[in-house]
Length: 188
Ligand code: SF4
Image (tube, rainbow, N blue to C red):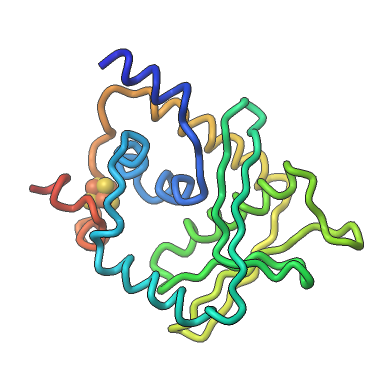
């Protein structure tokens, strides 16, 4: 187990979804960092992907990002789509039940861009927008200096979490857990 833990700590690649998981449930983040990605089995997530695909197929221009965190961690990001002319990164979501996690996921992508030195032609920073096509709503997201500090803290906390031999206890939010792909693992 010790060598597995060491590998997890040194090789951990931190993405926006993990940041969201960390804020929702640290157990979910730990399970994901230890190789369990089960979202494709979740009907709820699958529906979200269908909305994502159908709603923005014509405009869609996905983007992959990599950057290094202040503590040396490898950061990766997969942006749903970007309007580079307008300088807006878009993240498409089904519902607002995890809105705070969605906001931090998108802030994480804006942070990656900033750490890569990417700005608009006029020198201004990129901004973000969460799209909720089913709700016909959008939510603007910006990156402030205090958000960058918080993201750096979360990344370091995720590295520490990855090194733990056992997952944290489950959260006691049964209604929320029913929609999680790890439900059977946590409650079975
Ligand atoms: S089922 Fe609940 S406790 Fe288990 S990983 Fe999902 S959110 Fe966390």
